[in-house]
Length: 183
Image 1 (cartoon, rainbow, N blue to C red):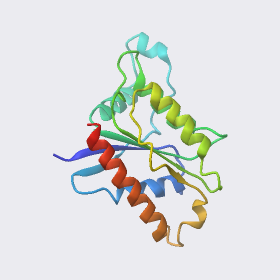
Image 2: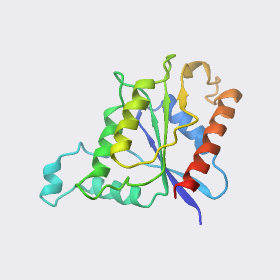
Image 3: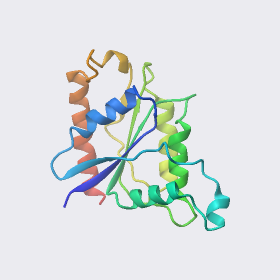
Image 4: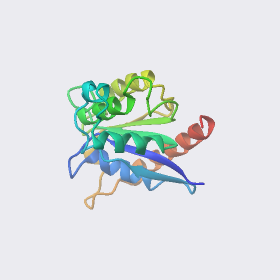
């Protein structure tokens, strides 16, 4: 049976560097694993009143059902103002509610942060990890997946350079082992 890893990209921009890294990493998954990119754009901002009144939006219901079907989760985030983009935080909130129905619970997780700057979106990476601890998502600790200076790691045709691809393969191999150990 093929294991599905949900890919959650925190950038909605068409030319997103973060999405390019996610696409590259997806291409490195071994046989028996497949990436399922989950679109975060349709998710309305979380409002607990809708759950309390038993009228969650269709987008929330679809999203929650998608996440329930996943074997593992991989988050790809740029850094906005030293934290995660709102679209990614909103997805965590939608999936964790209503209380007691957390769809993220116990799914092995990976965090990859991407930045044009040298700090490699360190702040976003760690803010995301804080939320994942609360959501009970065991997260790969080593090797850490910070991709800094991304504009220097992409060729003219939009592919990642070989050294970066080799690094991503190390990340994939560690994450697959981690997923197997935590499934």
